Length: 221
Image (cartoon, rainbow, N blue to C red; front, side):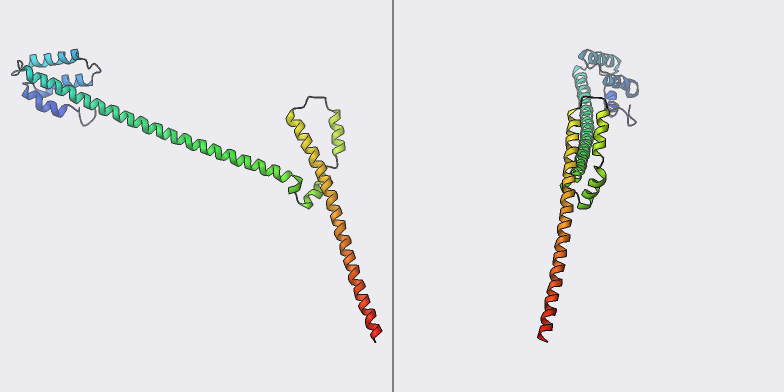
């Protein structure tokens, strides 16, 4: 029972003396019924009969006892309905908190998945030849793929195992990157030679122009 007492205590302390009963003696009978899960008419009738038989002044007043009976049932129903409402509110609040927590976990998991996918995509993009710098292409072409033939020979010596689609795709991608890197490296060297040749030609043209101006100046003198 709560520290503030039973919800019927105040009412019983007023009504029981009016019915010719001591509140301290007979109040627990009524609160005991109110706390019992047995809310049948038979249980209430037994309680009323006990109180009427114990009353010193109003045992024969049917209307008074009927009003008392109805009031006890009304107050009991009102209290239980309030308790049910509180339980429902608490359950709804708990469900809302759990739903909010679950939604946050889902959003966090989705965010992590997106970040992981973005990192993987970035790694894939960075490995594409067209996204590599000329220096990196040259280094990889020189050091990363020099031993392709040796690697192929080593693979031939391994047991002949069936390959999965992923392994086949990885090998094809590796082969494509190798070819692209070689091609890019060759193109880079060609571009470098072309730039060097162009610079030499420009330098020779400037030198020839200076020589012509010098010769023309001597003729004028």
